[in-house]
Length: 526
Image 1: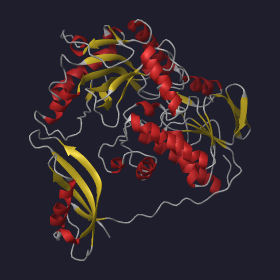
Image 2: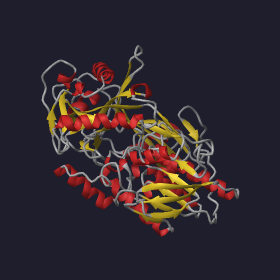
Image 3: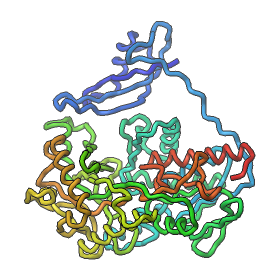
Image 4: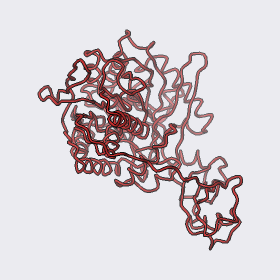
Protein backbone atom coordinates (compact mmCIF):
# COMPACT_ATOMS: atom_id res chain seq x y z
CA UNK A 1 0.00 0.00 0.00
CA UNK A 2 1.59 3.36 -1.03
CA UNK A 3 2.48 6.18 1.35
CA UNK A 4 1.43 9.82 1.11
CA UNK A 5 4.20 12.27 2.04
CA UNK A 6 3.34 15.93 2.67
CA UNK A 7 5.45 19.08 2.97
CA UNK A 8 8.45 18.14 0.86
CA UNK A 9 10.06 21.41 -0.21
CA UNK A 10 12.42 22.45 -2.99
CA UNK A 11 13.88 25.80 -3.85
CA UNK A 12 12.75 27.32 -7.17
CA UNK A 13 14.85 26.04 -10.05
CA UNK A 14 15.76 22.74 -8.40
CA UNK A 15 14.85 19.70 -10.52
CA UNK A 16 11.96 17.62 -9.21
CA UNK A 17 14.15 14.52 -9.38
CA UNK A 18 15.50 15.81 -6.05
CA UNK A 19 12.20 14.74 -4.45
CA UNK A 20 13.24 11.08 -4.44
CA UNK A 21 16.13 11.45 -1.95
CA UNK A 22 13.96 13.79 0.16
CA UNK A 23 11.17 11.20 0.23
CA UNK A 24 13.63 8.42 1.09
CA UNK A 25 15.02 10.44 3.99
CA UNK A 26 11.54 11.21 5.30
CA UNK A 27 10.63 7.52 5.18
CA UNK A 28 13.96 6.39 6.62
CA UNK A 29 14.78 4.13 3.66
CA UNK A 30 17.38 4.04 0.90
CA UNK A 31 16.44 5.81 -2.32
CA UNK A 32 16.79 2.51 -4.19
CA UNK A 33 13.87 1.12 -2.14
CA UNK A 34 11.45 3.54 -3.83
CA UNK A 35 9.83 1.80 -6.77
CA UNK A 36 7.52 4.69 -7.77
CA UNK A 37 6.99 8.34 -6.87
CA UNK A 38 4.00 10.33 -8.15
CA UNK A 39 3.20 14.01 -7.67
CA UNK A 40 -0.09 14.58 -5.85
CA UNK A 41 0.09 18.32 -5.19
CA UNK A 42 2.45 21.17 -5.99
CA UNK A 43 2.19 24.72 -4.70
CA UNK A 44 4.22 27.85 -4.03
CA UNK A 45 4.86 29.10 -0.48
CA UNK A 46 5.69 32.80 -0.90
CA UNK A 47 5.03 33.90 2.68
CA UNK A 48 8.73 34.67 3.16
CA UNK A 49 9.82 36.72 0.17
CA UNK A 50 13.49 35.92 0.69
CA UNK A 51 12.91 32.19 1.04
CA UNK A 52 10.21 31.14 -1.40
CA UNK A 53 9.69 27.38 -1.57
CA UNK A 54 7.87 24.94 -3.78
CA UNK A 55 5.84 22.61 -1.56
CA UNK A 56 4.96 19.08 -2.68
CA UNK A 57 2.78 16.20 -1.63
CA UNK A 58 3.86 12.91 -3.23
CA UNK A 59 2.70 9.32 -3.30
CA UNK A 60 5.48 6.79 -2.84
CA UNK A 61 5.46 3.04 -3.44
CA UNK A 62 8.19 1.02 -1.72
CA UNK A 63 9.62 -2.38 -2.57
CA UNK A 64 9.31 -3.33 1.11
CA UNK A 65 6.74 -1.44 3.21
CA UNK A 66 7.11 -3.48 6.37
CA UNK A 67 9.72 -1.23 8.04
CA UNK A 68 7.83 2.06 7.58
CA UNK A 69 5.17 3.28 9.98
CA UNK A 70 2.90 6.30 9.39
CA UNK A 71 3.71 9.44 11.39
CA UNK A 72 3.13 13.19 11.04
CA UNK A 73 3.42 14.03 7.33
CA UNK A 74 3.57 10.35 6.33
CA UNK A 75 0.31 8.46 5.88
CA UNK A 76 -0.80 5.30 4.17
CA UNK A 77 -2.90 5.71 1.03
CA UNK A 78 -6.17 3.94 1.58
CA UNK A 79 -7.45 2.41 -1.62
CA UNK A 80 -10.89 3.80 -2.45
CA UNK A 81 -13.63 1.80 -4.06
CA UNK A 82 -13.55 2.23 -7.85
CA UNK A 83 -16.39 4.25 -9.34
CA UNK A 84 -19.13 1.99 -10.67
CA UNK A 85 -21.37 2.91 -13.57
CA UNK A 86 -23.97 0.22 -14.23
CA UNK A 87 -24.99 0.09 -17.88
CA UNK A 88 -28.57 1.24 -18.24
CA UNK A 89 -31.07 0.97 -21.05
CA UNK A 90 -34.05 3.31 -21.17
CA UNK A 91 -36.49 4.67 -23.73
CA UNK A 92 -36.44 7.94 -21.80
CA UNK A 93 -35.62 10.95 -23.97
CA UNK A 94 -33.15 13.36 -22.39
CA UNK A 95 -32.32 16.80 -23.76
CA UNK A 96 -29.35 18.83 -22.50
CA UNK A 97 -29.49 22.58 -23.15
CA UNK A 98 -26.10 24.28 -23.01
CA UNK A 99 -22.57 23.09 -23.81
CA UNK A 100 -20.74 24.79 -20.99
CA UNK A 101 -19.03 22.75 -18.24
CA UNK A 102 -22.31 21.70 -16.59
CA UNK A 103 -23.90 20.50 -19.83
CA UNK A 104 -20.78 18.81 -21.17
CA UNK A 105 -20.00 16.94 -17.96
CA UNK A 106 -23.62 15.94 -17.50
CA UNK A 107 -23.38 14.39 -20.98
CA UNK A 108 -20.03 12.71 -20.31
CA UNK A 109 -21.41 11.22 -17.11
CA UNK A 110 -24.58 9.95 -18.79
CA UNK A 111 -22.33 8.29 -21.37
CA UNK A 112 -20.64 6.35 -18.54
CA UNK A 113 -24.02 4.71 -17.87
CA UNK A 114 -24.54 3.92 -21.54
CA UNK A 115 -27.20 6.63 -21.83
CA UNK A 116 -27.41 9.23 -24.59
CA UNK A 117 -29.11 12.59 -25.05
CA UNK A 118 -29.84 15.34 -27.52
CA UNK A 119 -27.56 18.33 -26.83
CA UNK A 120 -28.66 21.83 -27.88
CA UNK A 121 -26.29 24.81 -27.95
CA UNK A 122 -27.52 28.23 -28.98
CA UNK A 123 -24.06 29.31 -30.13
CA UNK A 124 -21.62 27.92 -32.65
CA UNK A 125 -18.92 25.27 -32.45
CA UNK A 126 -15.73 26.39 -30.79
CA UNK A 127 -13.80 27.06 -34.01
CA UNK A 128 -16.45 29.25 -35.64
CA UNK A 129 -17.08 30.84 -32.27
CA UNK A 130 -13.40 31.81 -31.95
CA UNK A 131 -13.63 33.48 -35.36
CA UNK A 132 -16.77 35.41 -34.33
CA UNK A 133 -15.12 36.57 -31.10
CA UNK A 134 -11.96 37.66 -32.91
CA UNK A 135 -14.03 39.72 -35.33
CA UNK A 136 -15.82 41.38 -32.41
CA UNK A 137 -12.58 42.28 -30.70
CA UNK A 138 -11.01 43.65 -33.88
CA UNK A 139 -13.95 45.43 -35.45
CA UNK A 140 -16.61 45.83 -32.77
CA UNK A 141 -19.05 43.63 -34.74
CA UNK A 142 -21.03 41.62 -32.17
CA UNK A 143 -22.73 38.33 -33.04
CA UNK A 144 -25.43 37.98 -30.37
CA UNK A 145 -25.61 34.18 -30.66
CA UNK A 146 -21.86 33.46 -30.88
CA UNK A 147 -19.62 35.42 -28.53
CA UNK A 148 -17.65 35.22 -25.29
CA UNK A 149 -20.78 34.13 -23.41
CA UNK A 150 -22.51 31.84 -25.94
CA UNK A 151 -21.15 28.86 -27.83
CA UNK A 152 -19.45 25.51 -27.37
CA UNK A 153 -17.59 25.35 -24.06
CA UNK A 154 -19.57 28.13 -22.40
CA UNK A 155 -18.21 31.39 -21.02
CA UNK A 156 -15.22 29.60 -19.48
CA UNK A 157 -13.79 28.91 -22.95
CA UNK A 158 -12.67 32.55 -23.10
CA UNK A 159 -11.16 32.78 -19.63
CA UNK A 160 -8.07 31.61 -17.78
CA UNK A 161 -9.46 28.08 -17.59
CA UNK A 162 -9.13 28.00 -13.79
CA UNK A 163 -10.11 24.74 -12.09
CA UNK A 164 -9.94 25.80 -8.45
CA UNK A 165 -13.01 25.27 -6.29
CA UNK A 166 -13.94 25.36 -2.62
CA UNK A 167 -16.31 22.44 -3.19
CA UNK A 168 -15.19 19.20 -1.53
CA UNK A 169 -16.45 16.57 -3.92
CA UNK A 170 -15.09 13.08 -4.66
CA UNK A 171 -15.78 13.71 -8.36
CA UNK A 172 -13.11 16.44 -8.56
CA UNK A 173 -10.53 13.84 -9.57
CA UNK A 174 -12.92 12.39 -12.17
CA UNK A 175 -13.34 15.83 -13.76
CA UNK A 176 -9.58 16.46 -13.88
CA UNK A 177 -8.90 13.02 -15.34
CA UNK A 178 -11.47 13.58 -18.10
CA UNK A 179 -9.96 16.96 -18.93
CA UNK A 180 -6.49 15.42 -19.24
CA UNK A 181 -7.95 12.61 -21.33
CA UNK A 182 -9.13 15.22 -23.82
CA UNK A 183 -5.88 17.16 -23.96
CA UNK A 184 -5.57 19.34 -20.85
CA UNK A 185 -2.04 19.66 -19.36
CA UNK A 186 -1.31 16.68 -17.05
CA UNK A 187 -0.12 18.98 -14.26
CA UNK A 188 -3.71 19.96 -13.50
CA UNK A 189 -3.88 16.62 -11.67
CA UNK A 190 -1.50 17.89 -8.98
CA UNK A 191 -1.17 21.69 -9.26
CA UNK A 192 -2.46 23.52 -6.19
CA UNK A 193 -4.07 26.11 -8.47
CA UNK A 194 -4.72 24.23 -11.72
CA UNK A 195 -5.57 26.04 -14.93
CA UNK A 196 -5.79 25.08 -18.59
CA UNK A 197 -5.65 28.39 -20.44
CA UNK A 198 -8.09 29.51 -23.09
CA UNK A 199 -5.83 28.41 -25.94
CA UNK A 200 -5.74 24.76 -24.80
CA UNK A 201 -9.29 24.68 -23.48
CA UNK A 202 -10.73 25.00 -26.98
CA UNK A 203 -9.10 21.78 -28.14
CA UNK A 204 -10.30 20.02 -24.97
CA UNK A 205 -13.89 21.09 -25.62
CA UNK A 206 -13.69 19.96 -29.24
CA UNK A 207 -12.44 16.54 -28.14
CA UNK A 208 -15.31 16.16 -25.69
CA UNK A 209 -17.86 16.88 -28.38
CA UNK A 210 -16.30 14.38 -30.77
CA UNK A 211 -16.33 11.66 -28.09
CA UNK A 212 -19.98 12.34 -27.24
CA UNK A 213 -20.99 12.05 -30.89
CA UNK A 214 -19.10 8.75 -31.10
CA UNK A 215 -21.11 7.61 -28.05
CA UNK A 216 -24.43 8.29 -29.74
CA UNK A 217 -25.22 11.83 -28.58
CA UNK A 218 -26.81 14.17 -31.11
CA UNK A 219 -25.38 17.70 -31.01
CA UNK A 220 -27.10 20.74 -32.49
CA UNK A 221 -25.39 24.12 -32.74
CA UNK A 222 -27.24 27.39 -33.37
CA UNK A 223 -30.15 25.65 -31.62
CA UNK A 224 -31.73 28.07 -29.16
CA UNK A 225 -34.30 26.94 -26.61
CA UNK A 226 -37.47 28.94 -27.35
CA UNK A 227 -40.17 26.87 -25.66
CA UNK A 228 -40.82 24.03 -23.21
CA UNK A 229 -43.78 21.68 -23.55
CA UNK A 230 -45.53 20.93 -20.28
CA UNK A 231 -47.94 18.05 -19.76
CA UNK A 232 -49.66 16.66 -16.68
CA UNK A 233 -46.56 14.66 -15.83
CA UNK A 234 -44.16 17.57 -16.31
CA UNK A 235 -41.80 18.42 -19.18
CA UNK A 236 -42.61 16.57 -22.43
CA UNK A 237 -40.95 18.60 -25.21
CA UNK A 238 -38.68 21.49 -26.08
CA UNK A 239 -39.07 24.00 -28.89
CA UNK A 240 -35.93 24.96 -30.83
CA UNK A 241 -35.53 28.22 -32.77
CA UNK A 242 -39.34 28.74 -32.67
CA UNK A 243 -39.61 26.03 -35.32
CA UNK A 244 -38.64 22.49 -34.32
CA UNK A 245 -40.15 20.45 -31.50
CA UNK A 246 -38.06 17.80 -29.74
CA UNK A 247 -39.77 15.22 -27.48
CA UNK A 248 -38.28 15.30 -24.00
CA UNK A 249 -38.82 13.41 -20.73
CA UNK A 250 -35.86 14.92 -18.83
CA UNK A 251 -34.56 18.39 -19.60
CA UNK A 252 -31.09 19.16 -18.23
CA UNK A 253 -31.03 22.95 -18.32
CA UNK A 254 -27.47 24.34 -18.19
CA UNK A 255 -28.01 27.76 -19.79
CA UNK A 256 -25.03 29.78 -18.53
CA UNK A 257 -25.34 32.99 -16.53
CA UNK A 258 -26.01 35.21 -19.56
CA UNK A 259 -28.99 33.43 -21.14
CA UNK A 260 -31.39 36.24 -20.33
CA UNK A 261 -33.99 35.20 -22.90
CA UNK A 262 -34.05 31.73 -21.31
CA UNK A 263 -34.70 33.29 -17.91
CA UNK A 264 -37.57 35.28 -19.42
CA UNK A 265 -39.00 32.11 -20.99
CA UNK A 266 -38.89 30.29 -17.67
CA UNK A 267 -40.57 33.23 -15.93
CA UNK A 268 -43.41 33.25 -18.48
CA UNK A 269 -43.91 29.51 -17.99
CA UNK A 270 -44.17 29.92 -14.23
CA UNK A 271 -40.98 28.00 -13.41
CA UNK A 272 -39.92 28.60 -9.82
CA UNK A 273 -37.24 31.32 -9.82
CA UNK A 274 -35.77 33.49 -7.11
CA UNK A 275 -33.41 36.50 -7.21
CA UNK A 276 -29.99 36.04 -5.67
CA UNK A 277 -27.03 38.24 -4.75
CA UNK A 278 -24.11 38.62 -7.12
CA UNK A 279 -21.37 41.21 -7.64
CA UNK A 280 -20.55 43.99 -10.08
CA UNK A 281 -17.61 46.31 -10.57
CA UNK A 282 -14.56 46.88 -12.71
CA UNK A 283 -11.49 45.06 -14.00
CA UNK A 284 -8.05 46.18 -12.87
CA UNK A 285 -4.88 45.75 -14.91
CA UNK A 286 -1.28 45.94 -13.63
CA UNK A 287 2.05 45.08 -15.23
CA UNK A 288 2.66 41.41 -14.43
CA UNK A 289 6.21 42.30 -13.37
CA UNK A 290 4.77 44.55 -10.65
CA UNK A 291 2.51 41.79 -9.30
CA UNK A 292 5.47 39.38 -9.36
CA UNK A 293 7.54 41.83 -7.31
CA UNK A 294 4.72 42.42 -4.80
CA UNK A 295 4.11 38.71 -4.28
CA UNK A 296 7.62 37.27 -4.65
CA UNK A 297 9.89 40.19 -3.82
CA UNK A 298 12.70 41.57 -5.93
CA UNK A 299 15.11 39.25 -7.69
CA UNK A 300 12.74 36.29 -7.48
CA UNK A 301 13.82 33.16 -9.29
CA UNK A 302 12.75 33.27 -12.98
CA UNK A 303 11.34 29.73 -12.82
CA UNK A 304 8.51 30.83 -10.51
CA UNK A 305 5.11 30.99 -12.21
CA UNK A 306 3.48 34.39 -12.90
CA UNK A 307 2.22 35.57 -9.53
CA UNK A 308 -1.44 35.61 -8.59
CA UNK A 309 -3.44 37.27 -5.85
CA UNK A 310 -6.83 37.03 -4.15
CA UNK A 311 -8.07 39.81 -1.90
CA UNK A 312 -11.24 40.45 0.09
CA UNK A 313 -12.65 43.35 2.07
CA UNK A 314 -15.79 43.61 4.20
CA UNK A 315 -17.47 46.76 5.45
CA UNK A 316 -19.14 45.64 8.66
CA UNK A 317 -21.27 48.78 8.80
CA UNK A 318 -22.87 48.49 5.36
CA UNK A 319 -22.61 44.72 5.08
CA UNK A 320 -21.09 45.03 1.61
CA UNK A 321 -17.95 43.24 0.51
CA UNK A 322 -15.39 43.90 -2.20
CA UNK A 323 -13.13 41.23 -3.59
CA UNK A 324 -10.88 40.28 -6.47
CA UNK A 325 -12.29 37.67 -8.79
CA UNK A 326 -11.11 35.63 -11.78
CA UNK A 327 -7.53 36.87 -11.57
CA UNK A 328 -5.68 36.28 -14.87
CA UNK A 329 -1.87 36.39 -14.67
CA UNK A 330 -0.18 37.36 -17.93
CA UNK A 331 -3.57 37.86 -19.58
CA UNK A 332 -5.74 40.42 -21.31
CA UNK A 333 -8.97 42.25 -20.57
CA UNK A 334 -11.59 41.20 -23.11
CA UNK A 335 -14.89 42.50 -24.46
CA UNK A 336 -17.53 40.03 -23.26
CA UNK A 337 -20.86 41.51 -24.33
CA UNK A 338 -23.68 39.28 -25.53
CA UNK A 339 -26.33 41.92 -26.18
CA UNK A 340 -26.23 44.82 -28.63
CA UNK A 341 -25.63 48.18 -27.00
CA UNK A 342 -23.96 46.90 -23.83
CA UNK A 343 -20.31 46.81 -22.72
CA UNK A 344 -19.12 43.95 -20.50
CA UNK A 345 -15.49 43.27 -19.55
CA UNK A 346 -13.86 40.04 -18.48
CA UNK A 347 -10.37 38.55 -18.25
CA UNK A 348 -8.58 35.84 -20.21
CA UNK A 349 -5.14 34.27 -20.36
CA UNK A 350 -3.44 31.46 -22.21
CA UNK A 351 -1.80 28.38 -20.78
CA UNK A 352 1.64 30.00 -20.52
CA UNK A 353 0.29 33.20 -18.96
CA UNK A 354 3.17 35.03 -20.60
CA UNK A 355 1.55 38.37 -21.46
CA UNK A 356 2.94 41.62 -19.99
CA UNK A 357 -0.15 42.42 -17.89
CA UNK A 358 -2.10 40.86 -15.02
CA UNK A 359 -5.79 41.56 -14.63
CA UNK A 360 -8.55 40.79 -12.16
CA UNK A 361 -12.14 41.74 -11.53
CA UNK A 362 -12.62 44.08 -8.57
CA UNK A 363 -16.27 43.74 -7.62
CA UNK A 364 -18.67 44.60 -4.83
CA UNK A 365 -21.70 42.66 -3.70
CA UNK A 366 -25.24 43.63 -4.66
CA UNK A 367 -28.54 41.96 -3.80
CA UNK A 368 -32.29 42.14 -4.31
CA UNK A 369 -32.53 45.30 -2.18
CA UNK A 370 -30.47 47.09 -4.87
CA UNK A 371 -32.74 46.01 -7.72
CA UNK A 372 -35.81 47.82 -9.00
CA UNK A 373 -38.90 45.78 -8.17
CA UNK A 374 -39.32 42.30 -6.78
CA UNK A 375 -39.40 40.29 -10.02
CA UNK A 376 -36.90 37.42 -10.15
CA UNK A 377 -35.65 39.09 -13.36
CA UNK A 378 -34.85 42.37 -11.57
CA UNK A 379 -31.17 41.44 -11.25
CA UNK A 380 -30.99 40.94 -15.03
CA UNK A 381 -32.30 44.46 -15.58
CA UNK A 382 -29.81 45.78 -13.02
CA UNK A 383 -26.96 44.25 -15.02
CA UNK A 384 -28.37 45.43 -18.35
CA UNK A 385 -28.68 49.04 -17.21
CA UNK A 386 -25.03 49.13 -16.09
CA UNK A 387 -23.88 47.62 -19.38
CA UNK A 388 -25.84 50.16 -21.45
CA UNK A 389 -24.43 53.03 -19.43
CA UNK A 390 -20.92 51.67 -20.01
CA UNK A 391 -21.62 51.41 -23.75
CA UNK A 392 -22.63 55.07 -23.87
CA UNK A 393 -19.67 56.12 -21.72
CA UNK A 394 -17.28 54.32 -24.07
CA UNK A 395 -18.63 56.25 -27.03
CA UNK A 396 -20.22 53.32 -28.85
CA UNK A 397 -18.64 50.63 -31.03
CA UNK A 398 -18.06 48.60 -27.84
CA UNK A 399 -15.16 50.72 -26.65
CA UNK A 400 -14.95 50.45 -22.86
CA UNK A 401 -14.78 53.33 -20.36
CA UNK A 402 -11.48 53.29 -18.47
CA UNK A 403 -9.71 55.29 -15.77
CA UNK A 404 -6.42 55.17 -13.93
CA UNK A 405 -6.76 53.52 -10.54
CA UNK A 406 -5.24 56.59 -8.86
CA UNK A 407 -7.90 58.84 -10.39
CA UNK A 408 -10.67 56.47 -9.35
CA UNK A 409 -9.71 56.57 -5.66
CA UNK A 410 -9.17 60.34 -5.75
CA UNK A 411 -5.38 60.56 -5.65
CA UNK A 412 -4.99 61.83 -9.22
CA UNK A 413 -2.38 60.95 -11.82
CA UNK A 414 -1.60 57.65 -13.46
CA UNK A 415 -1.75 56.49 -17.05
CA UNK A 416 -4.36 54.47 -18.89
CA UNK A 417 -2.70 51.37 -20.33
CA UNK A 418 -5.24 48.73 -21.30
CA UNK A 419 -5.12 45.52 -23.33
CA UNK A 420 -8.89 45.75 -23.96
CA UNK A 421 -9.99 45.64 -27.57
CA UNK A 422 -11.53 47.31 -29.55
CA UNK A 423 -10.24 50.15 -27.36
CA UNK A 424 -10.99 52.34 -24.33
CA UNK A 425 -12.28 55.85 -23.62
CA UNK A 426 -11.26 57.76 -20.50
CA UNK A 427 -14.23 58.21 -18.17
CA UNK A 428 -15.15 58.75 -14.51
CA UNK A 429 -16.01 55.16 -13.62
CA UNK A 430 -17.48 55.97 -10.20
CA UNK A 431 -20.26 57.90 -11.96
CA UNK A 432 -21.24 54.72 -13.85
CA UNK A 433 -21.66 52.55 -10.77
CA UNK A 434 -24.29 52.69 -8.02
CA UNK A 435 -22.87 54.92 -5.29
CA UNK A 436 -22.65 52.13 -2.65
CA UNK A 437 -20.74 49.92 -5.12
CA UNK A 438 -18.28 52.67 -6.03
CA UNK A 439 -17.70 53.53 -2.35
CA UNK A 440 -17.13 49.89 -1.39
CA UNK A 441 -14.68 49.41 -4.27
CA UNK A 442 -12.68 52.48 -3.25
CA UNK A 443 -12.51 51.25 0.35
CA UNK A 444 -11.56 47.80 -0.86
CA UNK A 445 -8.76 49.06 -3.10
CA UNK A 446 -7.19 50.96 -0.18
CA UNK A 447 -7.48 47.81 1.94
CA UNK A 448 -5.89 45.67 -0.79
CA UNK A 449 -2.96 48.08 -0.95
CA UNK A 450 -2.35 47.63 2.77
CA UNK A 451 -2.24 43.87 2.19
CA UNK A 452 -0.25 44.11 -1.08
CA UNK A 453 1.96 47.20 -0.95
CA UNK A 454 2.18 48.57 -4.48
CA UNK A 455 -1.31 47.49 -5.57
CA UNK A 456 -2.26 51.18 -5.75
CA UNK A 457 0.04 52.22 -8.56
CA UNK A 458 0.31 54.83 -11.30
CA UNK A 459 0.61 51.86 -13.68
CA UNK A 460 -2.79 50.39 -12.75
CA UNK A 461 -5.82 50.88 -15.01
CA UNK A 462 -9.51 50.18 -14.35
CA UNK A 463 -11.94 49.23 -17.12
CA UNK A 464 -15.70 48.86 -16.83
CA UNK A 465 -18.07 47.28 -16.36
CA UNK A 466 -17.79 43.75 -14.92
CA UNK A 467 -21.35 42.49 -14.45
CA UNK A 468 -21.36 38.77 -15.34
CA UNK A 469 -19.68 37.42 -12.22
CA UNK A 470 -22.48 34.90 -11.57
CA UNK A 471 -26.15 34.31 -12.30
CA UNK A 472 -28.49 37.07 -11.11
CA UNK A 473 -31.17 34.52 -10.16
CA UNK A 474 -31.63 30.89 -9.18
CA UNK A 475 -33.82 28.29 -10.91
CA UNK A 476 -35.13 26.67 -7.74
CA UNK A 477 -34.78 22.91 -7.46
CA UNK A 478 -35.45 20.31 -4.77
CA UNK A 479 -33.45 17.57 -3.13
CA UNK A 480 -33.98 15.35 -6.20
CA UNK A 481 -32.40 18.15 -8.32
CA UNK A 482 -35.62 18.70 -10.27
CA UNK A 483 -37.40 22.04 -10.49
CA UNK A 484 -39.78 22.60 -7.61
CA UNK A 485 -42.49 23.62 -10.07
CA UNK A 486 -41.87 21.46 -13.16
CA UNK A 487 -41.10 17.76 -12.95
CA UNK A 488 -38.48 16.56 -15.41
CA UNK A 489 -36.68 19.92 -15.46
CA UNK A 490 -33.17 19.65 -14.00
CA UNK A 491 -31.55 23.11 -13.61
CA UNK A 492 -27.78 22.86 -13.30
CA UNK A 493 -24.56 24.81 -13.34
CA UNK A 494 -23.64 28.44 -12.97
CA UNK A 495 -26.53 29.80 -15.02
CA UNK A 496 -29.02 27.96 -12.82
CA UNK A 497 -27.47 29.51 -9.72
CA UNK A 498 -25.75 26.39 -8.36
CA UNK A 499 -22.08 26.86 -9.28
CA UNK A 500 -19.36 29.47 -9.67
CA UNK A 501 -16.68 28.45 -12.14
CA UNK A 502 -15.64 25.67 -14.47
CA UNK A 503 -15.00 23.01 -11.83
CA UNK A 504 -18.06 23.60 -9.66
CA UNK A 505 -20.29 23.78 -12.76
CA UNK A 506 -18.88 20.48 -14.04
CA UNK A 507 -19.46 18.87 -10.64
CA UNK A 508 -23.05 20.10 -10.58
CA UNK A 509 -23.68 18.67 -14.05
CA UNK A 510 -22.34 15.33 -12.83
CA UNK A 511 -24.68 15.40 -9.82
CA UNK A 512 -27.66 15.91 -12.13
CA UNK A 513 -26.56 13.10 -14.46
CA UNK A 514 -26.10 10.75 -11.50
CA UNK A 515 -29.58 11.66 -10.25
CA UNK A 516 -31.13 10.88 -13.64
CA UNK A 517 -29.23 7.58 -13.86
CA UNK A 518 -30.27 6.59 -10.33
CA UNK A 519 -33.89 7.34 -11.12
CA UNK A 520 -33.76 5.31 -14.34
CA UNK A 521 -32.07 2.43 -12.51
CA UNK A 522 -34.91 2.50 -9.97
CA UNK A 523 -37.47 2.36 -12.77
CA UNK A 524 -39.18 5.64 -11.84
CA UNK A 525 -40.34 8.47 -14.05
CA UNK A 526 -39.32 12.12 -13.62
